Image 1 (cartoon, rainbow, N blue to C red):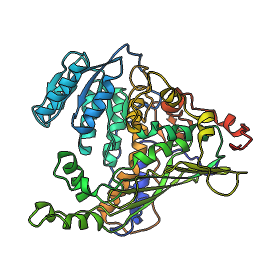
Image 2: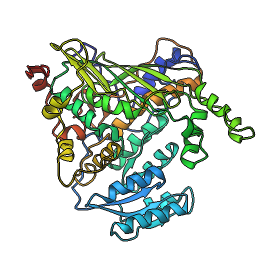
Image 3: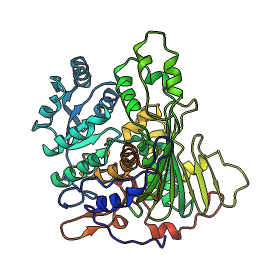
Image 4: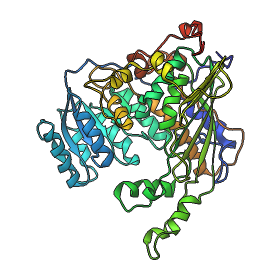
Length: 488
């Protein structure tokens, strides 16, 4: 553990403190030290934290689905494969998509769900239904928070695609609404459920890498041709690339790393510095479009690559990178380093104390010893193997543990805020045009209850860690002897 100060900060007062500290930070286009500015509004009255919120288990979960485009239809198919799920309503601004979703539900032997397609506000009528327990949201990024807030205010749990929120104010709105309504608010970050990610998580909590000091995460996914397509999915994504500069998609990489480091369960994000390169790659691809193509008139704000450095309250560091335009293989980096070993993904490899020089790339002994029970079951021969596509398997694991057991297994509202704050803080300071300076501290770990503060050090691990039997109490992990070639 670190000797860093454990001074307690009010969950409702941290923005004022961070804002005062931020007057001398930030970056402009070339280099950015980011955080909160002094104009951040203070959230409303304190309410009970939802970090351990539980509801009575449900025999069946009645779901309303908002957004049934490409990603939405994929998620809908996953839900329909879960026996205890009943899809009662679907909503989209494109009527043809609603009809297609209704047909998919009927094809699975369920009654045709109600359809909502009357316009941008049609989701409000869906949320007012009295036969829904959970609302799934798979729409463009800037609609996630209004839809989730509407669902929770109507007494429904909300599950949001990533990113959950785009601004600091929206992060707080999710937390405040969940605390007020006592509804689950879950971010559907499926990368937390990957086979490699859960393997590394189990190795971390069992002390294989020793005490962690550094991690690296990212979303490096070359998609220039996709972004320039004249398709609805590409069009709305290109809108954000044209107007925002920074890490637009942090949680695929940061989500698993936050679990490794126990963020909001023993540690918290404290300070960040972020910068973007100049924009060239997408612009050059745009210039190669045929003469007269209207897309040639578009310009882009997002740099070719964004790099963010985060320091935690316990003095650990996290590097987070984002690029959708550089010519390189796909990677989420997924690296963690401790006092006795290091793991690095893409391709997966590790090195532990006592091993010869170089990476160990045959991880089969580690899968056998530390592999997550859910993935061992999915990979076993025979029926129930699941989909062969790794993305599909992650998606199937992600929603299933959420509603029927009464407690959230994925990132809850507080942890959603934790994962989205770096991006939101970064964009706020960039808009303010602040110059590099001392940098802020953003105290995201304390959540005030009615009588006393619940400190980030005392938060339980997320439901994913607890319910999947991956959690080992810290003292046990510290004292565990893992001798032999697989570390100690």
